[in-house]
Length: 284
Image 1 (cartoon, one colour):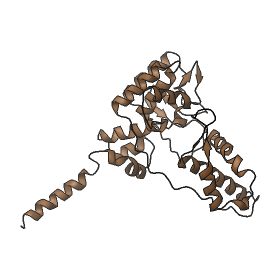
Image 2 (tube, one colour):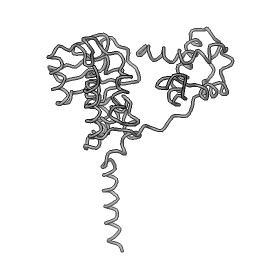
Image 3 (cartoon, one colour):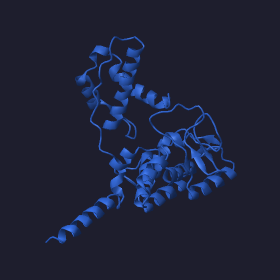
């Protein structure tokens, strides 16, 4: 699997509810009941819990559907019932302003033994690389993940022998400001882009959350960094096709989720309509 740990998290969440049931019990009613009763204690005071987000439930039920499809394909069950998913959430609108980004980096650097979080934030803002791929990137070719070719100024987001998934990770040029940071870190002895005491960091969930809380920001997750990078690129006037290629994101996603942040993304349509108006005025 490309991300086995995420499958493991989903299985851990699914088992308490679905474990005692049979495949025949999988229907719309039980799926909706799972979504309604699914809670987590993460980030809550002792003894308390809260409902999980609908997108989290979708990922977990998607794992259940994949397991059913696999068992059907292997002949363990005669048919795979359809798992009913909660509706998709609206695309996330949250992105960082320049001042918010600077504030977040500053608080990450100031955090206790958390300078690796600041590196993660810088790379995320400059490259728009997804969290899981970013945490596996180093300064030399490897089998764990991608790497930064500092000599040629290219970042390879996929490692040697890694399985290709629908999360595209195409090579892209390293932005000049990021390249300067990377060269400095590598010169100081870093082997991985995000490391702590010489070891690759596998999870930044708690450290990132602490930096966000310290900076007094709301609604900011690691994925916000990619959203911010794409939004800044579009607001800076970058062509949407170039943005899609650089960030390994489909043009459909760029137009649907991010395009409205670019002030000139409909300029050609407005210019065409302005031309029609001038032509119409001649016949008044």
